[in-house]
Length: 220
Ligand SMILES: Nc1nc2c(ncn2[C@@H]2O[C@H](COP(=O)(O)OP(=O)(O)OP(=O)(O)O)[C@@H](O)[C@H]2O)c(=O)[nH]1
Image (tube, rainbow, N blue to C red; front, top):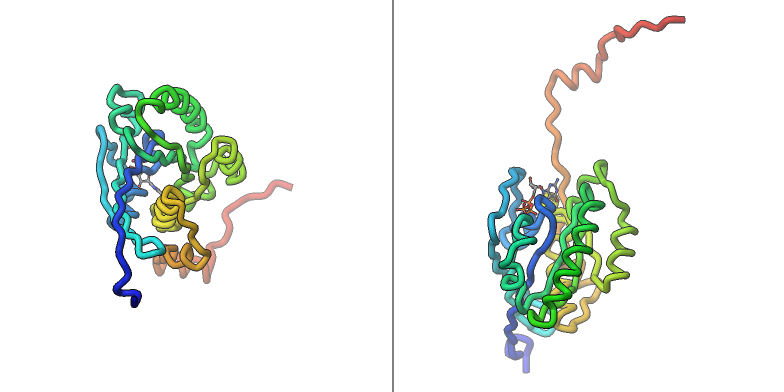
């Protein structure tokens, strides 16, 4: 049987993104499903859905149903309905992560109580906004340790640059379905990160070439 004649299998997975408000859930979902990014923050009221089909090794087509739960909805009564039968991806951002870790503990306690009835799995945690390195309040190692302690897959992403945004869903889907991705397969789904081109005005260039005399006084 040739490759093209191989049987194509279809699966569907429900992935729920949970995290603090403005931690980057919608941006990550949009980057993954629509390959787009918006700088403007628009709070998610309730929840949003995204659908994307990916192909995993072994000719396996997987449709990912991504449920983007608004940060304000986490304490709400509907949460147990939303997370029913889902794989949970926790979303923290490197800027406000310290606060979010506390949120996680609270969430985890609530969700463990729901777990017996809701058939949910805690699979993965992503640290978002990694392009904002200069504003970081948490070390990568702290997130990795946190994930190890809680049995979660640790991933670092940026919806802005696209860095690892698709890969984090691909890795999660593979893990859920018990598929091991090779290094080459992971690299293939890795987005090429492009840096912004800064368009310095002529004036700035001129100032750099002929810097103005310093007007600073020094008292000796
Ligand atoms: N620099 C940078 N900004 C990001 C990134 N991801 C999200 N943002 C910005 O962070 C803000 C919040 O992002 P959202 O994706 O709306 O956050 P959210 O978690 O969905 O927020 P809620 O709807 O309140 O739950 C927006 O202004 C985004 O443009 C990123 O990777 N890098």
